[in-house]
Amino acid sequence: MTTSHDVAAVTSVLNELVAAWGRHDAEAYGELFTEDATYITFVGTLYEGRRDIVESHRTLFETFLKGTRLADEVLDIRFPGPDAAVVNGRGDTYNGKRPRKLTKIQTYTLVRQGDGKWRIAAFHNTKRKPLLESLSHRFAPGLVPAAEK
Image 1 (cartoon, rainbow, N blue to C red):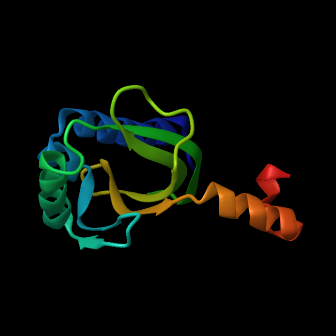
Image 2 (tube, helix red, strand yellow):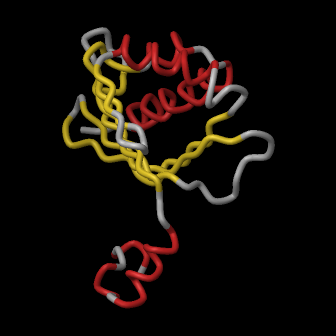
Image 3 (cartoon, one colour):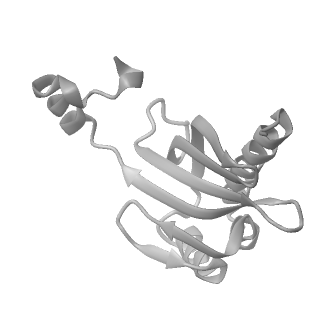
């Protein structure tokens, strides 16, 4: 049975992720993932394992994403079992002011490990295409998700 403590613990991991990004601390960021985690970027790159995630983010924090911050918005959290959580949300990186509309849709799969800590076992990040989404919904209304009807 899922408790409010489980929801708070999972949410805390995501808050720690945002904080580690804000410090550009690749080690702290990676520590939030399982040793065998998978991480798929919005451009389709697959990273496998915590070390791969740490090293890729170390490079990103020093180059393309230097000085950026991470915005994260949880849309829903489901617990398919007592030690597993699936989180769907929106996110984005930014400089300066936090964007009103977040351009990526994300899925996190978290697991409670033997030490009692929740960690991210899988992450998938997809760039949203609002114009294409809007057009497809207009011309094929059956494609509109139930939550948006």
